[in-house]
Length: 114
Image 1: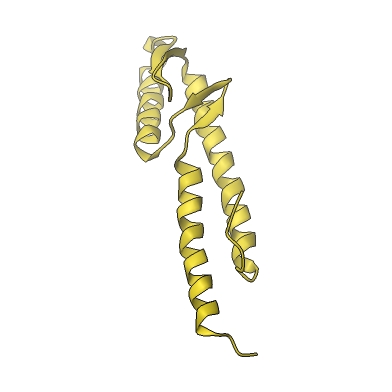
Image 2: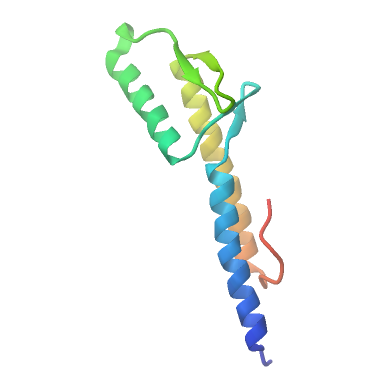
């Protein structure tokens, strides 16, 4: 079977586009508790920091804090809320990478989508 250069270029372009799509999905806002949370790399670092700080403070940690959501509203948020946001992000990443792996194992003749 002979594969043309244009076919190789198309598959390479689709593979690069798939990476961008994958990253876009994993970095995009996520809905948890009926509101949209920012979960980009910097946002996840802030969430992890808030969780770690609350864990270190133990019983001295505040019951909730005002957390700025994706729409810039402030939501009173507990440590458990933040843990669920991180869990939701991890589960979405798992779904994305499973779908991406399936796409990669195919012939890559169509764009990667979720």
